[in-house]
Length: 366
Image (cartoon, rainbow, N blue to C red; front, side):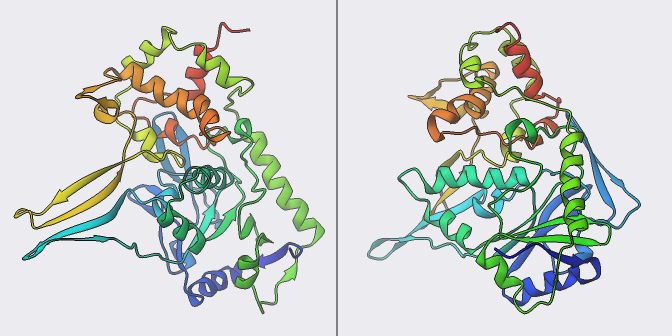
């Protein structure tokens, strides 16, 4: 790919305009109801310019920065998963007519999305979901179509939150691949790296100058400073075996007494993929739709077998979630199900921090 370019701040709106002109629907961070979320935008004016977030376990607040930067924040409650693996999908329909039932498979509408502002941990989350939906024998064709139609414009993190631990998971804070374009925000503009032919097409016939050595050094310093600022850690050395050796540890009960089983952690997680299929009919039962909805291992009926749940207490449901995410995910997919984004910590109503719980569970191990 071509050498990194420099995009002056005053020309940043041109990037959005080019994406729109090429038929993309631009999905990017924006401020809504006191949080930075991902939504469709039409111009840079919708970006959270001058805003940052303050995160702690069970706490999220926005604060003005006093500068004009567009990406001085960490990740919020949304993940890109909602656009590639929507929380509600119609699968098929059945309509009753005079001669009987007519069945039809629903063909989803596929949009050409340009995801603007994807962080390194979120790129890792996309790769994990690719492994789940595309590389395990059965291919989810709707996910595949959405993935192929999307353009990924990453942004290197400058301001991680107090709940980030991507350095422990080796997923950030710098984007090392999996993007079409990558931006590093500096005061005067953006260092722009091209990661694919699709990304290069967006820049075709645009007279951007090559990034200078000084700006490339400044770009690398942004990532180094971000990495230095991350204080939260998770020891991943032999973590699978260490966790699976503690399945009867009394600390599971202590966590279970705090956990609300509210499913927040699984809903905000960029890698959780559980779903269930239901059939919904209209009132006269002439039209039936089969739907797939996000599900969570924290739901009581998620483990229902022969009329009874296998995991009927919160202790066992929390243990299932944590050991799957950090341990048995390796058995299934050859990698961790956690990318260190910290969302599950921030959006837990009671502030349960999985890095703290893992340390407590493994404290007595050599």
